[in-house]
Image (cartoon, rainbow, N blue to C red; front, side, top):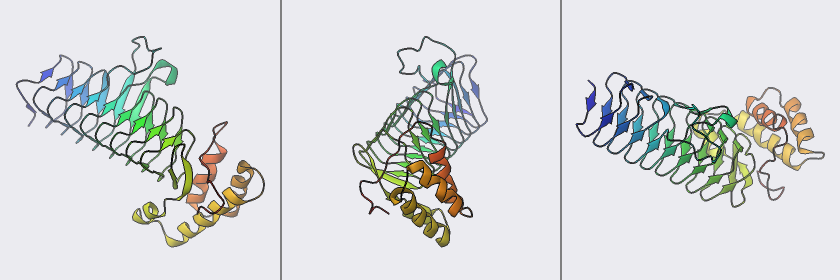
Length: 266
């Protein structure tokens, strides 16, 4: 059954799903929708046109859906949508979108946002993403599925982090990180592939082996990066992981990439 602590404030118009639990001193705005089984611990505040999926948990002092930190924002109606089974730990902040960025911020299913991490306006966060403590996503950042961002990392606006990528703690990321890549440093460079993460996710040995070879071809071969990515896509046509890296590079437009500091990273 739905449980609401007497000290919580639920504004008229808020929609609460079945089995929602709202703890002491929480505040839920009039345009908020909480899915079935959502749990707000004490002092959590949910504002704006925010939708939170089923079975999510929001820990104390999280601020979800308040106006974006964009000086051009003038009160226009924008949204924040959070998927199912996400965990938002203490002090997490997530902002809705802006008109200039498409009007919406999105977080996928099964994400974990650890203490004091921040998701800026117009970000798109895929499913299964982990943000460690104090991670900072500027506006318009895209994190693809299962990316992991180490503690204290800042990611520059409009950057893309590919699926299954790993960014080491205290990094400053101003360029795109390829799928399956492992980046670290300030400013971040590409330190190889996230092989441990791939093994944990059940990728086959031959897929990993092909990806390692393709990585060397893309970053150590002749020609431009785009030319080498196109060659790798053709040479490794049967390997989906290689195709994802190649497509990520070829669809980048004028974006720059985190690259290895030397030809020996693999």
